Length: 452
Image (tube, one colour):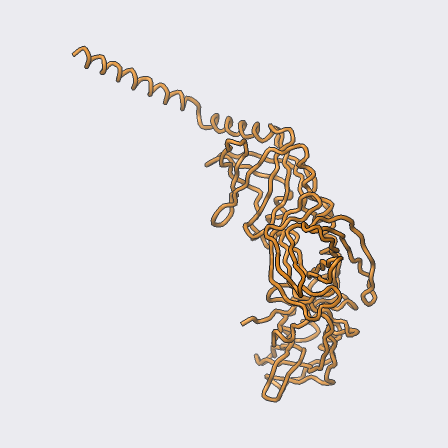
């Protein structure tokens, strides 16, 4: 009996002890607990003397940015990044932040910043973010966050305490110069050429500057693009100091030459001025070294090998008139519609008909009687590199409703802009879009292709 009594008394005391612990756990109201959690996260954010290093990859397919964040407890954060757009606007910014606590702690960058710029790209579909949920602190002391608004699997990021030398990872000079290289030519399509200095090999590629994706599309001899090969290789990249580091290495061989590119260290940056018709254009060049210690030259190219055989690949090209851009890159849609009544599209054909080949450029016109007329001007042509030259027939051929009268003078105005001085440059802007650019007047015409 005595033993049972002691067990009973011990159980009562243990229960009272547990209840007292529960009371101590919840002896603070929700607002107080929220304020303490917010203050604790602020203290963690502000603690490192050199701030936090973040390798920010907005989406799995993109490359990464180096970012250094230095917080204080007064809701200010200094953001250093290597995003080179807008003349280096995002290299060094101090903005405000806040910690919210609703269903959990949230870190929100309040002002327009590096994060905001990336967030708004591609009509806010890029996958970047400026609001993050706090997840936890790792045993190594990293602070883990995830994206608040990602559709599907949230992007997870880790703040690592920065070392004093980590600021040297920010390749601001490289990033700014790459922006000059991709934005310096008047076309919307940017083509870069990397040529080896000690062997006759050149690679043509494009850079998606904000996605940090490098895409190789052609390899040839440096001396000529004839007998070159199309390639399809893309990789995300990071800029570490003066080096572009690919997430995935390009390896292979071309005409007996081994090609291996996983990192490109960039050295001297220079520029030259060339003349395109009446305009002068600044072309930029970098000397560099590959991880194999081979010397290379990276330069802006007016030649796009992918624009050399478009006529063999596709039979029909269609450009809604909104895709006709003036020299200032604004759409000429209203002007074209006012000149050519009923016009909806500009069209380009390299096709076969019952009567033989049809090479023609012209317009699709919707008539007042609801019929459609295709007013096309046939041509012979030659292509040298990515420049096409036209020899137009004197008159238009009408298809569809042939009973209407078309304004040939108005249509010729735009065909002349398209083909002026036999200087129409062709660039492949994307998988389904080609850019036809005439440097003699600065106008660009953007045609979709049907790949089916």
